[in-house]
Length: 464
Image 1 (spheres, one colour):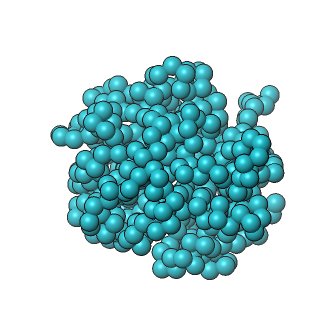
Image 2: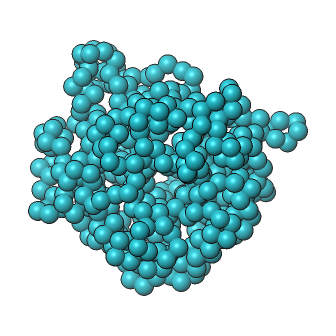
């Protein structure tokens, strides 16, 4: 029966656009995801985040839900256009007040707030001015971070600057399957750099305004890349450079990997990187957030037949894997989640141990891990999601094995608290441990929520 350290932080997570709704209320401005979801054909079933889970109006109910789970922390994101509608200028007080109520409500229930500054909802006005490919967006992000530190920094003790900048850069600007739906590889690499720079500037801004001793973090969806055979070592290297070291290098080491620059030379000359940028991006962190769902399998393409592209990130007009045209992303053996992602928890153990080897003085925490399944409602009105319980059990076992191997893992946040707007998939994919009825918005605990509550209470995994 795997047990976790006594001070291990148990939590759950959501993101503003996925749960809040109230998309045009109380002074909130439009985000790139409002524009994306309102564009016909971009989101499954024509779904939008206009109402989402109506969390904005059901805040107290959802806070009580968190308290019932017994979690020690709640990871949420701040909607940039809700608090600063155009991405610059004065704050929107009703929007800020919502997050004040959220933070105060968490603390009143003895739940630590973990605030993510950016979970993909860029103010549309900033995108109209060029978005993340423009340096100015990084500067605006730093100012936004400073303002949030001034508003919430006396109570929020853990800050996450960015969520999955890989998705923001590559899915938003290269493949176009996420907002803002652009397909420009050079712009995607410029966006990558300005996200890295914005992260570093935001950490500096938060350290100057938040409470002394506040923890600084960033959340990366690091890809655990494997090759089909030993002959695929260079394919692994190239995919790893683009997926992982493009962020780990500047953020943790103060430099982009030389091989990444060489691999992408035909796309850009990287002239958007100015003197001092890499040093600015590299700010001391207290903990590294890791999102993990499944590993990635690659193979060098021999040019014969159709190239396999089963990377799990939706097929778009272009590939998110810039300058990887001769690499195949191989479909992995099942079982699979409803997203089509294979279930392989060994990748999580191996990824955490790699991070421990490469950055032994930097603790990690799992800021997202979970799975979508069909989740039919049984005759008794409950979702008996044994497949999700099994998934969570496997992955928490993997975390415990990494800890036993020496990795300093400080916490685990299950994704997600509730069924929500799953980006371009709309409401068709359910990740929640709590079911949300799309007609009534009623919240109902799934079996996985009861299971997770017991794990949180004991700090131990039951015998499988």
